[in-house]
Length: 416
Ligand SMILES: *[C@@H]1O[C@H](CO)[C@@H](O)[C@H](O)[C@H]1NC(C)=O
Ligand SMILES: *[C@@H]1O[C@H](CO)[C@@H](O)[C@H](O)[C@H]1NC(C)=O
Ligand SMILES: *[C@@H]1O[C@H](CO)[C@@H](O)[C@H](O)[C@H]1NC(C)=O
Ligand SMILES: *[C@@H]1O[C@H](CO)[C@@H](O)[C@H](O)[C@H]1NC(C)=O
Ligand SMILES: *[C@@H]1O[C@H](CO)[C@@H](O)[C@H](O)[C@H]1NC(C)=O
Ligand SMILES: *[C@@H]1O[C@H](CO)[C@@H](O)[C@H](O)[C@H]1NC(C)=O
Ligand SMILES: *[C@@H]1O[C@H](CO)[C@@H](O)[C@H](O)[C@H]1NC(C)=O
Ligand SMILES: *[C@@H]1O[C@H](CO)[C@@H](O)[C@H](O)[C@H]1NC(C)=O
Ligand SMILES: *[C@@H]1O[C@H](CO)[C@@H](O)[C@H](O)[C@H]1NC(C)=O
Ligand SMILES: *[C@@H]1O[C@H](CO)[C@@H](O)[C@H](O)[C@H]1NC(C)=O
Ligand SMILES: *[C@@H]1O[C@H](CO)[C@@H](O)[C@H](O)[C@H]1NC(C)=O
Ligand SMILES: *[C@@H]1O[C@H](CO)[C@@H](O)[C@H](O)[C@H]1NC(C)=O
View 1 (tube, rainbow, N blue to C red):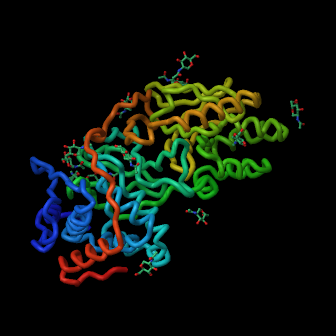
View 2 (cartoon, protein in one colour):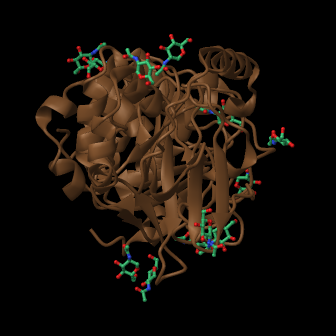
View 3 (spheres, protein in one colour):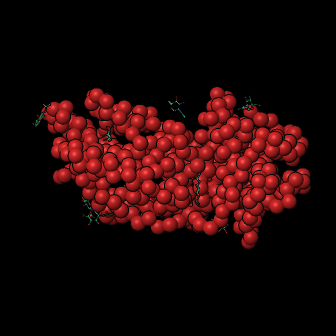
């Protein structure tokens, strides 16, 4: 749907405000963005009423239905409760987008909560603050826990990049196809973009790798236990040689024994640390084989080096549920290994994650995908200051909200 009715977020029917004295919605571009004012538990119902009312007013009835579908579960209430806590960006799937989602998913409130969590970023992001293509902005969503556990309790990120032909819009980078975030509006503390597809949750390694690097997946499968150890790692970075890269040195690979193949593969992995394109240039990393990596950035692109092998990063930031994959154009043929250094790098990573405070602040590092060096320039809007106490929802509150929202649209909308 084209979001031609952005201003309708302002034009809530009076009934939307019937029980709401403090919360309000404002259209983007209006001089004064309204404060959410959901600081007291007594106002949380007002807050949600306003927000869901604004979304309903904008025609996003399926999304409102989805929100109501999770409202009586613990995870769902936690998600809805966290909405009021600081500025958020919401990628709101259109009714059409949600209609393509299977009933099985819509009926599974745990899964639906995860999906909705991945559509919400913990800060305000506008095109102006998003990196220019091919550089990426790594933006933390509200999706974390369960199968989406990252070191330091970080949440799963979305990858954003500015549209190269339209500086006022940006794309959400996904492996299937980028999704365009165009027009925006604000509703209380929420910056809302309507998108025409539902975002895919980050895949596991065993789901993602066969699609981007099938040969590598096959090779990893030949080493007993490796694929499982990668899939279950708490934080992993993989430099994945493309099929053509592996094809190019197939015959020399064939001459290596399994110890050497294991070492070569391990020297493509950072164990225990998730390094997105934005972080490559700013740290010293040791491979799971215990060998140091070197990163080079110049006008040709970003390169990774191990011993005497160099590879160009041709596609960065393929997000996994437990880490990230960067596709490279060459195999790093380093058969050396240093188990002690590997163990020590892993221990340091685990220790760093345990004391990391970064998870408490929105991460808006901006840097390159294939371009030169990565200075993390803060972007995507402000990140400090606004704080309201988390609000708790009870089922009776949610009942009230459902009733009010129902009243707004005259009971005409149907939930799934
Ligand atoms: C939530 O509500 C739905 C529909 O009213 C119901 O089927 C489901 O059992 C409820 N879940 C919980 C956890 O109360
Ligand atoms: C979103 O809104 C802001 C103002 O709030 C504006 O500067 C920006 O251009 C809008 N559009 C996008 C795509 O960020
Ligand atoms: C984790 O993934 C497995 C396999 O895909 C799935 O069966 C399980 O329900 C997931 N658990 C959570 C908490 O998402
Ligand atoms: C960028 O914006 C232009 C114009 O709005 C649009 O036609 C194009 O599809 C967008 N690019 C991408 C990659 O979505
Ligand atoms: C650029 O993107 C903005 C925001 O989505 C949109 O309003 C505008 O029409 C686009 N411009 C072009 C030339 O497509
Ligand atoms: C990561 O390190 C841990 C602890 O040393 C080890 O058990 C695990 O197998 C390693 N994973 C990989 C992929 O090397
Ligand atoms: C593999 O080859 C290396 C180098 O020739 C050798 O040191 C090692 O013992 C071999 N390992 C096995 C398991 O054959
Ligand atoms: C990486 O290691 C080099 C050499 O030990 C050191 O000079 C540099 O400061 C380190 N960089 C970072 C980001 O730790
Ligand atoms: C950039 O670095 C790579 C890897 O070292 C090198 O092959 C390439 O020639 C460099 N490009 C420029 C323009 O210096
Ligand atoms: C969002 O960011 C705030 C800090 O601004 C932090 O306290 C909060 O834990 C973050 N929320 C999530 C869900 O990551
Ligand atoms: C990508 O980021 C690098 C490093 O910050 C910068 O030098 C380069 O100009 C950026 N590329 C674009 C297209 O903005
Ligand atoms: C939230 O957004 C408003 C309006 O753009 C801004 O004034 C405020 O500083 C932001 N708060 C935070 C914590 O970023």
